[in-house]
Length: 248
Image 1 (spheres, rainbow, N blue to C red):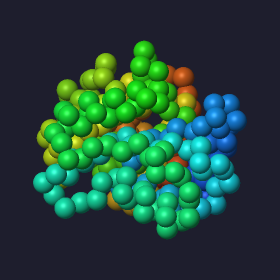
Image 2 (tube, rainbow, N blue to C red):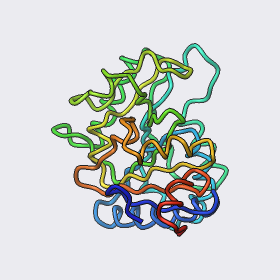
Image 3 (cartoon, rainbow, N blue to C red):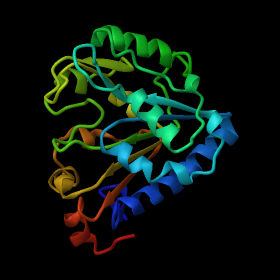
């Protein structure tokens, strides 16, 4: 269905969402590999990891041509948490997905946010032309209960309004840890495809606000020359279901 200019697919449960996501990812990845010789994807953490456990194993693709990047990361030098690349390396191993380790472009989590953001920009520049914003083949995003995406949080005006750098440091995130790095909106909105997913009743209020026109970070994802797709479950989107009367 189309809602406020966005394509929205609502499924019954997380397993069906994973199947839907797998179908889209397989097509996007294989077209990119055929055209460009590789597939460059940006990933986040949180609930997306759970969703991908239902999606990745069924995809038929040349995994050796996938390049995995991270849309945000937590600076972990002071806390005992796994970095995202470890989370995904474990998931790929669990699902027997043979993406080469050198194709996983890691964020340095042991330095300051400013140093980490500069380092990741230099790593991205090895894979994308430096004269423009990176153009990912696909970016996968989840949504926080406050409407944040990546580490782009409400009221962080400096980072939300960043218009020139690829990766920005975040110093005072409202959820721990406070220090992070994140891709900026010009990078997100330059993607060829972006798929935003959310499931569970705890996300229903924020989904209602986003599609009701609230000025939230997740509502600022508006691809300049690409395709934006929302994949939700019925528990996250009761208001949308009531209005549009269908589940795909």
